[in-house]
Image (cartoon, rainbow, N blue to C red; front, side):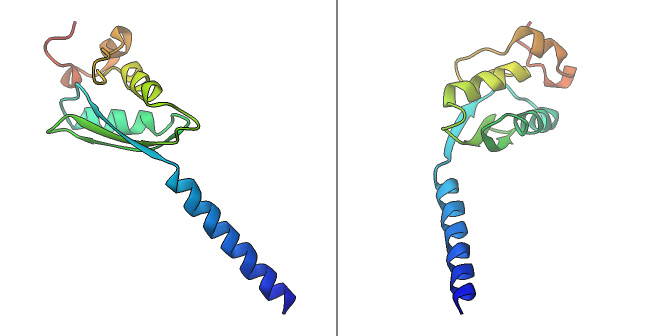
Length: 113
């Protein structure tokens, strides 16, 4: 009986900790220079490897990138910088020129050089 109570207690602690951790994430919406589905794939894939970013989703039509991140691991400004390192504008921050040049031609917005 003690083992059952201990097991149930342990399970409840795990559930509580999992719920608490997800409640500590923040959501950030970034206006990008993305123009196509390749941009969507590139941004979402590359951001998935950044420590502290939980998920990302780009709506190509509106150019809005929604990023769920852990503020204890990465700040909103750092998330924007990561987007620029991939080659895209992030709100008022301009894309890194070297990263932009590496993008496929379909992803390059016309006014960037």
